[in-house]
Image (spheres, rainbow, N blue to C red):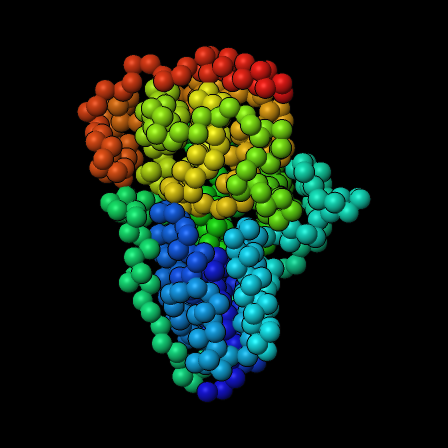
Length: 471
């Protein structure tokens, strides 16, 4: 077998603007793309694990179209990579970096071990617009507030996206397992068929999604992105999560729209950098994924019982507040949730119900196909008041007034809550096919007559809790 290098794909299922793949191809050796069902994949919850498998399968098809193939193996990353190196005589392994604590620990261990064994192990920047450690304050520290972070990078040059490289293939391919045999979607049960109808999987779908957004909607993005009742967002979070399109590609598309005079383009660019900010924080303060980012919140009297009736009502979309319930049901039907809705349901859980943000964060990690460990953790702590940039921490969203402002005619609520819809649409009815059978719910059930905690009572209780804590 001729000299070979391994390209280890994790959350970068694309051929274009893929630094690790391009570097592997530039080495002049034959390239063996590899996807591992390793400790990182095994540790994922239901929806992201299932969606990751779908992304990998689509990438395998993409590689086959380019004359290559994706080698799939199951087992601990270092153990499987060592076996592949022994089988193929590979002299190097390339991958694009991830920034969450678990991925960093795995990657650092793999890199150290391979280098000690004389194998070239190279990580590349491919998941963000800017690497987390390249953005520093004037004193050399890291940013804890988003706005100055944005100001520090908005004028930076961003390298142009890389073209699709030419993949040299080995004379003999190593054996591969079949992704479908791994059962990555097993925990989705019957919900998989419902959610699948709302997914756009693979590099081509991601590029089409970006083009449609920039062509049709980016001009109104500043205002439309907050509206629950219109299609005003890019919906690219799903594809960015699995690297089916690069953040750098999205950045340059946004910059072209900005130069063309489309007013919403700058807001779109800011959202891409908000994603970078999450990686910046998880790199410098990895505890954000597991405990309160602000130490003064340690000891706050959160409810930590996920089986509490109020928490169960929240999870099941049965709080009696239609906008909160619609948002939760949107997640079960589509695998995603509108960003404005995410803030509302997070505020309601952590402030009206005084429930620990980690319960909500973990539930989102179970249900979202666009789950990202850094963005999910930062978003929940921002909403709870315990995280960075959570100013003012005592802000309590009123779900009723928010619904009036961002869903004035009730279209979003009726789209997902069958019990309040005269003629429930498919999205509302699909909820009952997506949820666990054990919930024993149907469209004929009466809607709650009153909220489990009203908007006014919840706000009052939250403010009293903050005052008693001495905030």
